[in-house]
Amino acid sequence: MQMSFDLHLDLGLEETIDTVSAALKVEGFGILTRIDVHSTFKEKLDEDFREYVMLGSCNPKIAWKAFNHDARVGLLLPCNVIVQAADSGGYDVSIIHPDLLLGAMGFADDPVFAEIHEEALAKLEKVANSLS
Image 1 (cartoon, one colour):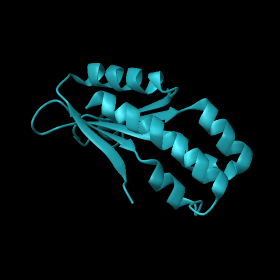
Image 2 (cartoon, one colour):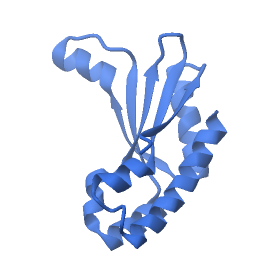
Image 3 (tube, helix red, strand yellow):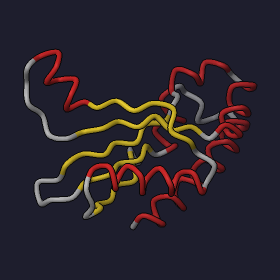
């Protein structure tokens, strides 16, 4: 089971986030949440951590289908995208793979979720490919 689509962008943090957000938007995803892990660890623990931002993304049309089939899918949403500083410079981007979501709740044998999975997979593959 693949965990994520992984890629590297040689951009600054905000430019990377903007570029990833724009690519997601093309496929119908929006950013619902933004968690700055670096700042949170510094503020709450006075610990330094590399620049690391989690973006909670969602495609409302896909989410609508999933919620109407089994509302427990909310345990897995929004879908996370990670943007983190790379040792070599630039930022590494990881986009959650739908296989991970499908398997996490035991939905792998559900034909409705299989269809939803295929739709999400196609869209997220396009996002990853557009950023590569």
